[in-house]
Length: 476
Ligand code: ZN
Ligand code: MN
Picture 1 (cartoon, rainbow, N blue to C red):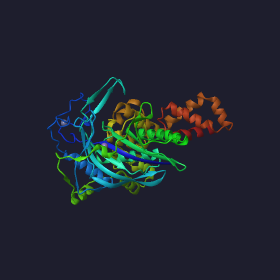
Picture 2: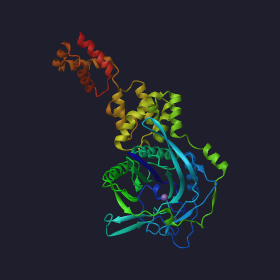
Picture 3: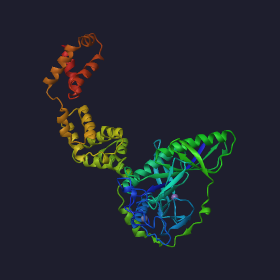
Picture 4: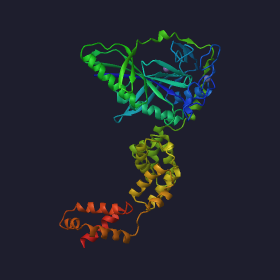
């Protein structure tokens, strides 16, 4: 079986204002605004209103185009894509068709340990339509329209049909989102949404199906699910000798199925014409050079640098660059404590704890300096492994300085051997059966006794020291 998948990805950009008017961009607001409160005659599409281009959005799109290796157009312009639907009250969407900002880009990703280059057909800017709220669900009694979303700047990136599996599409989207985050144009923790349309066709033993488009899939994980579902559906059709029709389907994230939508329009049906209310935009060569020069360090380069400077394994470096805020925390910490300690603890227990809470470092309320303080205590031998883990957990839960938490939970490591000996004596006294088992040669009992001592000290003793003292005492 051969699978061919291509993606059309829409990303809401985090500009302050909308693409063609001065209304605030709702994705930046902490609280959900009242429906239809962030609107003006332009984004409501009133007759006579005129769009004006948000320069920042155009700049952002050019930056993304350069970072994704596109060839930028010397001159580009907007067009009207005509269609009738309540989410677009002008009856057309302002988008780019004939000459997009960039063509022929690419992105390299790793799939099963091998590098793979995904071709990118085009990147352009367009406005988001309004949001339709189906009261009582799809097929409910009526629909409400919220024009707050109308006019949010979107970049659309269209890939070549280079993906051979749903996993590849997911890995790509993940990397794509990560690069946008490094560029500072998209924030995973904000309300900005990445939506994809996926085109997929299948062929089994010479029998090929037509191309099916799945619309409006939100997020990166859902794309993989939708495509997996569609493969099973199309495979069954092909096997039973039924033709797979060219069609447009919708992903239903609640039912986890794709559903037939409507007959697909062809591009001709949209009757594109150029947008006369906006000027043509020139992109100069020297501007492209300066954008390139000012790009932030992207994750791949950062990873290479970490490997080179710190001698890290590829996997550790990869984990460190997976989120810009984690990479930043690491670089901050690596100046103050051993980079190895910083790298392993940040990608290890800290990330594990944050993941468990489903939050990112930058939204955790933790201060970078707290992580440094904690790891310094660990390096100086004031905390055991277990103690440091506990402090990380408490730090995420209570958002307090580690020194305060060490005091509060009494987690300072027991350094005096005398104190450890006392505890070991106590454990030996309380467990005569285990002790006699050990003496008659059941070695694994030692592990059990070490565990009891550790529990008795709440993880404050060094396990190695405990083991040594136990062996000495039991041997006597
Ligand atoms: Zn507006
Ligand atoms: Mn579009």
